[in-house]
Length: 97
Image (cartoon, rainbow, N blue to C red; front, side, top):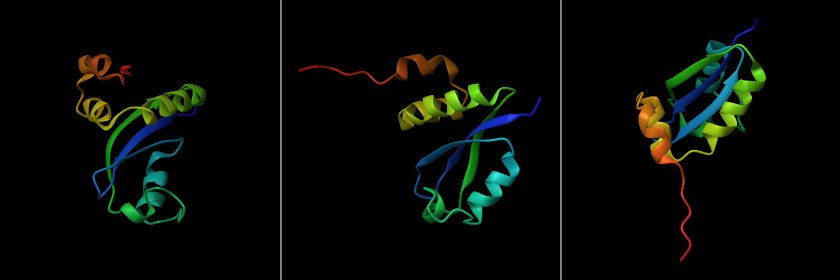
């Protein structure tokens, strides 16, 4: 089975970019060398890979990428730092006034 990867890149401005790819090294190379001028990361280089995980099913990888993209910066940093027990408590909560 072909591997797929969900990855998080830290941008030079401190923001994070989350993506999915079946060839992680090629995708990182393209991000770092500005292969995609319309990409979020183009003007935020240099970039640093701070997290990735492997999947054997691309559909699950895409689902997880979409999920992580909705997370707050704090929750993404907990994932990056391996603080898995904190993730549930960092869910976005909406409070009505």
